[in-house]
Length: 591
Image (cartoon, rainbow, N blue to C red):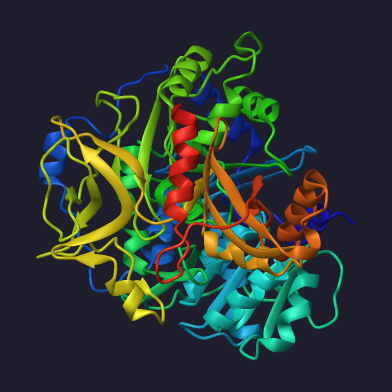
């Protein structure tokens, strides 16, 4: 039996307010017929909103109780649009549509599995590795309801990545599917904190609880735990320049309330909107735009599950479904604009956005030729929510990611934390004194020194270099460290170098960013070969090293470019000067 068929057998339409397909399609028709407009629904006068925006968290807050359950009540009272909370489709015609009431119904069952069957308690950590399937959303809400701390991970993680994350986080429970379960089993014995393994599958597996079967056995009655606004809610692993990925911790209010600025003002959503965000479920951007921001506004989260990103499928989906708002990475836009625009008609699409890396002005112009719509760029990090962006109603300056978001004072500062003049390059920073924004991350868990390094004077330093022009628009210049931003992925050179050094051919390596017309930048490795491999055919050895890195760490980190060198530039103390190699790469692009 296929998993989706099995899922339908368990997730029966038991609710009196379950959606009538005819009503839903009538809602879709209204969406399709709604006059397209570029006028903002929520964001009017930028300066006025900046001046009056004053969102503050209460002492206690839980997104499941204080936001999702409020939308449930509105549905029951007929006070919400007919669009579902979650609308999921895949490539073989399967479809799941859940109202907020149905989302609550199923997530309460999963919450009971976590607390009643598995015995998890508040603050226990849950490691979640699932692709874009409906259960990923249920797990997010169930963890909110139980007060357990969610740790999302991409399905591209290798056994080594999983081992590190389990040991570093002390996760007690893991939820995954048949693809990742074998990797978990190879490292589970070395992770004593891991005592509960839940599998999304229609088959049984030794040592694992079957998630869907367990949900079919428990009650749908569950009282959401009481959580303080500042208590831990989620942890994301994020790559740095040196060492293993850091654990970036967010509180219940930092995302649950802080992402209001994303949903209301940048995404410009209402409950009549359908948002499609293409982010991988392992990244913070998926929490941003596939959970909190749209559901704060009562909007519908649309998901098209694709094994691989396919430009034709994406554009056909945007034409075939009443999607009003589309958010994806600049790399995706660079691929999409090469399609023949005469093949597509975007009837419902109103608002397009991007984040994760800079977008080329040329791509923005080509997208407007294809769709008739502008792309609104946003800037943020795993450690923050949206801290700057171009909002509807504002002038778009191609190449700039806009102005500071409401609730933030974003400045460009020098190494001592002092604001530099407009037009001068410096560190992009957020003011945290005298008042620290509640939407900023809590800490790098277990690493107080690395947390403290982010703050200078009155500011939190983002780690990016930038410039502010005379109109207050911000421009990205580059990273202050050696982290590589490729196709929306954040890749630390240390992780790739560690993987390379395990191969017997590699005596030494240095990994830097290199310009790429599609991905913006890619991973390039400069490799010093051991004596035994210096005579090997270089093209053959490059493929072997690339395959090796893919097998050792997440495949998206592998070096797409490899250059063999006799030696690496170093400081007097023997440290590799990646900056010198990176400068050489980018100067070649300019010449």
